[in-house]
Length: 249
Image (cartoon, rainbow, N blue to C red; front, side):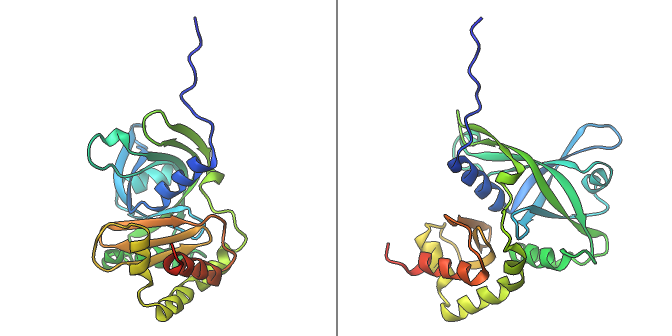
């Protein structure tokens, strides 16, 4: 019997870039965990942001079933990627297998994660400091990318995480660098939105930067832009943003 060809393509830089954008541009996702009582998969919808290294972060209530499940078994799966008009299966999506790491108050990363989450989800300010809420970092281990019909790829966790020694330094100076950029160029976010063909919406703003790119947000729209090469410092990121916004096409 003739052996069937593998449906999995060789993972290339284009696939890695698409996977990173699908993960880092998600405002929400489907989270699947293992029910500790029955062992059955348990899926729910969660809000998503990213840490400075691109690791997904979620904010959940300790009272929820999926939080109790993660406390017993750290394995989880995150489905990201938005469908559009027509067949939903024609649009790219990414399933990321993760290990969940709790980040509660007092953790070394807590304030950074809280700030980055609120920058993307401002309405979460209503409940983010409730004592029964906590963050999880979902450390990517493996991922399955479906880029559309006939475009399937397997990726490792390192394909999705930003490997840069400058992550911590950039995190420390990110807010100030963006604030200075906006003071110099008050129209920078709107200009970026036009240059990048973002959906028409109310005012856009920069809601996050990292050494690999930046995020723009306006209402329900989130746009992720990935640099060609990693930036080495926050000022370098803002310089890249200015070039994208104001350089001659």
